[in-house]
Structures are given as structure tokens and as C-alpha cells.
Amino acid sequence: MNATTSASSKKSILELPYDEARKFFLKPTSYCSLDLPPYIGFGGLLDDVSSALTGKQLSGLSSGVRDHHDVNYTIFHNKDGRYAWRPFQLIHPAIYVSLVQAMTDEAQWNSICARFQEFSNNKKIRCLSLPVVSTSKEKDRAEQVSQWWQEVEQRSIQLSLEYDYVLETDVTDCYGAIYTHSIAWALHTKEEAKKKRRDNGLVGNVIDNHIQDMRHGQTNGIPQGSALMNFIAETVLGLADLELSQRIEELGLSDYQVLRYRDDYRVFINNPQDGDAIAKAITEITTGLGLKLNPSKTRASSDVVRASIRGDKLAWMGRKQREKDLQKHLLIVHDHATNHPNSGSLVRALSDYHKRLLKSKPRRDGVMPLIAIVVDIAYRNPRTYPITAAILSILLEFLEDDEVKKSTVKRIQQKFGKLPNTGHMQIWLQRATLPIDKDIAYQEAICKLVTDEKVSLWNSDWISSNGLKAAVDAIKIVDTTIRDQLAPVIQSEEVELFLSNVEGYYG
Figure 1: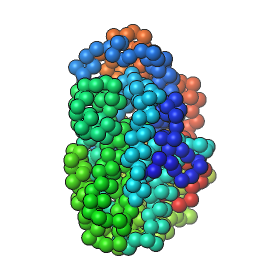
Figure 2: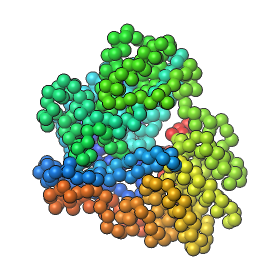
Figure 3: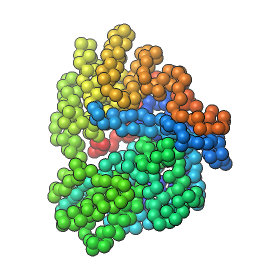
Figure 4: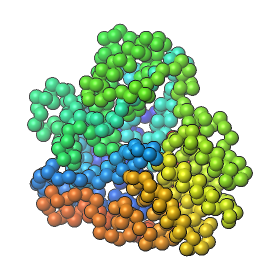
């Protein structure tokens, strides 16, 4: 596991001193990794909660948090346009800030970093997914994605010079399956953690208790949707790396390389039997931590270069990507969406189409078919919600009559109304329609906040301090100045991950 990154444009979280780590985790984009319109942000709210908690213990301002449901706010994100949903959770800000402050206490942060150094002793097992901090003009998330591209894809291709085989596998529902007690095992060893189960001097116990507080006392699963929880997941997966290193040493194997990005493993070997032995070891170790590998995503290949690059990316690079006619161009993208749903290359293809559309104007009678095609792509590919909303904002502007715009929006709403759990789409569709009519109604609670309705995102009934309750008022997440000055057309900077053009990246 590497504590540092290979490029000067970013730093690993482990390179930061405790106070800088605290600032990183308290960034709005670290708190919520979901793409949201520019008028929705958490900076002011997190600042207010931090001020309310500075020098105080959350336990002294509250009681009985585990007796309350819906402490966190969940946005269900449809994964496949059908029946699979991923719950993104906005952790209750008071619990989130309390946990960040506890973990980034100077002594505790130093102990965490020291433990991660132990995880990384075997240079043949490399973790490439620790949160990174941008030192360039790019966003932290952009640098995180760049980390994957450079250190996983490009490094995998290079390893074809040394290895003849690659085996890939991943953990099923990793975050949902993590046993919260295993966090303390990872940070302090299982023996020490069990011996001091109720010792709040152990940061692993502090983390465990905070997660149980926000989840009605549950000990299975951690929330998805923040850099903090990504980092906490790495503690458990880091323990798996450490145990894997010990197991491989016992097997007497030396000719291998393992790259891990979160719960995805790539094992490079020259002997297929070595790959099988390592895969068996990973299975046994993860099972012992309450996790299990996904057999449907476990595969081996002797074509290391081809296996190193995602199939959707290869498919997109290998086909004609555009036509002079706008509708034919969009149909090419639609066909790619059918064959490679929810893929990174699809988002890239739509981003390119969006940029083209910003400089073009379709025939007036051709706008509605384009809207229908874009809506169909979004309907079946939830990952594309932000960029498809941006494309729709342009197409809606080409409809010159306001009543036609409103009726079209209503039809789009009715289409998505057939799908459950489309809160994220509603948030982005509202961004496209706010300049048309602020009063167009959406059921998602965040959308209601945007239109000045009084809504509570988090259950704060367990908080006894009026000052802390006021600090977590959800209305603070909406910047009305930005909202009221929105341009009708969503520009690239609102939905593009990278500020600069990144060649070769397809997600």
C-alpha cells in the first residue's frame, strides 16, 4: 500500500498533518461526493457545526441518538435504470463533524497514519485508492480519478512487460457489508480491540461508535457518499492487505503484483496456479472480515494489455464516434449506451455531445426527437443524470414557446415518475427547469429546499442543544444568490469533472 502518489498534482491524505487532514475532511466536496448543482453546498453548514462543537463533546449536547431512525439523509441513486439502487447518505452533520474532529486529533491521526504504514510494508501489494488532495487547479475528485487512470489502468498495461496473466475480482457490496467492529481490529489488531472493546481512548472504537450512532445501533455497513467513509473503508481493506501479504509469504510465492483500488483487485502473475492460490487467500481473508468476493466479476486473462482497459472504453475507441447530423451523432451515443450501460465512456461521449451542442443549433422540428433520445439515455443510465440534464437545458432553450417548454418538462417528469428512487435525477432536472419556472414541483426533499419549502433532511430530535440544532438547519445548503442568477443553459464547468482536457480518460 503506497502512502504517496506518483504525481506532484496531488497528495495522499496520509501525507497531511492532523490539522490539514481535518480541513480536507470538512470540505463540502469531501462530505458529499454526489454531483450536485452549484447552488447546493454544505460549506456554511459544516462551518457552523464545527464552531458549535469546537471544544465540546457531542455526547454533552445530545442523548439517545441510537433510539432515533433516519438520523442520516439518504438519496437513493438508481444504479441500472431498473431494480438496483445505491443509497448515498448525507451523514448527520453533527455526527460527521464530531467524528472528523475525533479522528484528526493530533495523537489519534498520527496513530492512524502509523498503522497505514504497517499496511503498506509489502510493496508487491499496492493500495491505490486512498483519498487524495489536489495540489493543482483540478478538483480533489478529478485528481482521485486521475489516480485510478495513472496508477491502475496505465500501471496495469506496463505490468504486461513483467507478467503473462492477470486475475481480477472484487468484493460484493463492500460498504454495506463492513462489520463496524472490524475497524478497531484493523487499527489496533483484533486482540487489542477485543481486550479494550469499551475503551474510548482507541480511535477504532470511537469510529465504530459514531457509525453505530448514525445507523440506529447497527454494526453491519457504513454509509456511502463521503471521502471520510472511503478512508474508513480503507482501514478494513488495509487489514486485508496485511493479512494477504502474510498468507502469500506462507505460501512461498514471490513472483506476483497486486493492485487494489478500493474493493477491486488486480493480481498479476506468470503462473496461473499462483493466481488461483492468491485468489483463494483473498477469499478466505475477506470472508473472515465479513466480506465476500463477487464470483460473477472474477475473471482471469492471458491478454494483460486488453484486460487492463475497460471494455466500454475499448468499444468506444474502436467505433465511429460522431456524425455531421446532430441526431445521427446522438443515436451513435444511444447505441453505445445500449451496449455499455452506465459506463464512464458513455459519460465522456455525452460530455463531448454537450460541448458540440453548445456551439450548434438543431432544426426547430428536430429538437423534440433529440429530447426524447436524451431522456431515454438518462432513463436507462442513472450515472449520466448531470450531463443529460445539461444537454436537456440546451434543447429546452431551443423550444421558444414557454408553454411548450413547461409541457415538455411535465412529460419528462411523467417518464421518470415510472422509476422509483430518482431523487438525484429530480435534483438535476430541477436545475434545468428553474430558469423556466421556479414553481415546477419535485418530490425530492432537496428540491423542496431549493424552492424555499421548510424541510428537515436529518432527524435531530436527539440533540438537546438549541445552538447545535440551529447549526444543522438544512436551509443553509441552498445558496439563493446563485440560484436566482442561474443561466438557462447548463455550462460545462457545472457538470465536467475535469477543468482541463484530460486525454485518454473515459471513466
